[in-house]
Amino acid sequence: AQTVTQSQPEMSVQEAETVTLSCTYDTSESDYYLFWYKQPPSRQMILVIRQEAYKQQNATENRFSVNFQKAAKSFSLKISDSQLGDAAMYFCAYRDSGAGSYQLTFGKGTKLSVIP
Amino acid sequence: DSGVTQTPKHLITATGQRVTLRCSPRSGDLSVYWYQQSLDQGLQFLIQYYNGEERAKGNILERFSAQQFPDLHSELNLSSLELGDSALYFCASSVEPYGEAFFGQGTRLTVV
Image 1 (cartoon, each protein chain N blue to C red):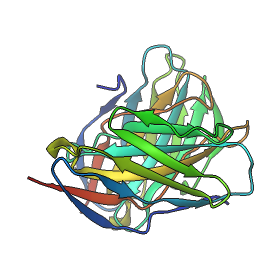
Image 2 (cartoon, helix red, strand yellow):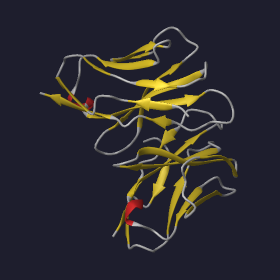
Image 3 (cartoon, one colour):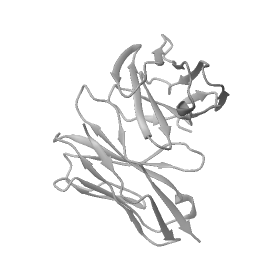
């Protein structure tokens, strides 16, 4: 079974600075998807960014970017120019790409605090 | 707003009782997923339906069941509730069985 590990239960960053959240995963599949979800205090799960494993180029969404290292099975999230609204729980998630396994497997999450 | 609607937002009930959580997917989405978020187990996949049929099953207890109706809304039934069933229950939907999932705001279930 696939597993996702987030080794940092809590992180903090100064406003306007950059922070990187770590995620590693374990799979025997060669094609899959990886995601970062944000869960603010409102508890809504919000998709931040996604990465297809077959794409070598790292995904970027405005201030959010990833460092995808397929061989190392590592998928970190970098948040640039951190804002107060970025304070939330961040979950790394994995999903197979093919038919037969549609669910997301989540890590335990990293709680990010943004210091004004 | 993701377009996925879950009701109720909060639910408090006693041990041994049965509750039903409801989910309305985004317009046009055929696939519905249920997830449980608890402090000790994190976010866990429970079950998925696609166009009325069960497509995938995760760590769903036998006391729990779900269905998807012809109008595509879904219900998660939890019976013989235990204190450990207290959690946040999310519904998500997608257009395809394996498409990108959009989450509802969740139902906070407290079993006392």
